[in-house]
Length: 373
Ligand SMILES: Cc1ncc(C[n+]2csc(CCOP(=O)(O)OP(=O)(O)O)c2C)c(N)n1
Image 1 (cartoon, rainbow, N blue to C red):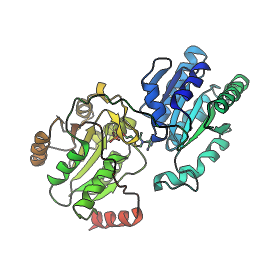
Image 2: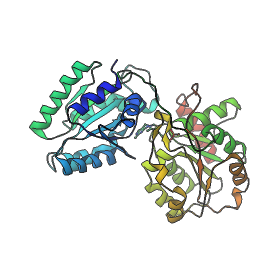
Image 3: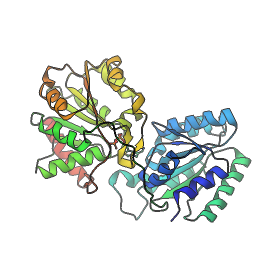
Image 4: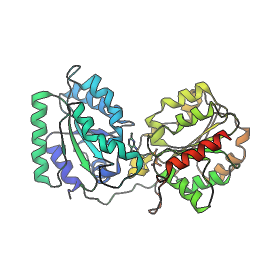
């Protein structure tokens, strides 16, 4: 296995000193090392396309080649800047792409990763981006980086390194102390316990969906009311909006993460504009991408409730403890929708969380029957 520090050292020694991207658990330890150093500038982007555009700006300002890291699920987000900004037909700009390989063929993975896992290499081939799979020792990586540099010298175009699960060694991750005490799972339980029966719940990508799923299982509750957005990070709120515009009788609750909201923050404007009064948008804000290893988001400098207000949400509130959460849910009928509740939570989760990724087509049918009953 490759030590995360070795990967960073090889990059820095080869003058790759600007690194930006969106996290994936496959390079959790590399990102922990990256966050904890000052040899390379690290920018946490809200979305992969944004990361590649920030990287382009860095190249324009320095003539140097930036590094962009992403999960292969983010390939769709970089497609437009790759073809309409960095391509040789346009501005001819280089970038070293570090792409994690979820859904690698013949390896067990969740349904949302299978298709993009099969297509990852083809995606790069179609776009004429040369790639190599990251070797797991330092000497070979040094060789591969020299090849990439040669390619940049010749073409000034993007080059990719695909990173398989298990290539980078895990490491001890220093946790910063959280300022909030409420847990995400605890909040989800409190929300479910304090809702009237049969409300619609749209749960965001990662541990939010997993914790909701676990709570339903523990309570032996039928989860026909729930839709788990297991992939398509950032899309829970727009799915809920699409439902709310048709389903005007039932209340619709979105359980969202701060990283997910930031990835598609434009949705707040669309929700506010169409203003369905049965939509309740709850952001479980832990200032982290907790599901991929707790990497920070930029939510600590964002006031979601003010953004909601200026996007035309009708009610909004920031909540920092369980009692306040319970009281708000008890009185939620008196809040005009769309409502935004920003619940400040700490990072962390149980290690033994299950996943809602099995029987999803069956579950989708139950959910649709419930909506149409
Ligand atoms: C387009 C895309 N990029 C990256 C990921 C990997 N990913 C899965 S969950 C997640 C973090 C979600 O963070 P947040 O919404 O804040 O919820 P939390 O995990 O903190 O509960 C990331 C980055 C993804 N699924 N899709």
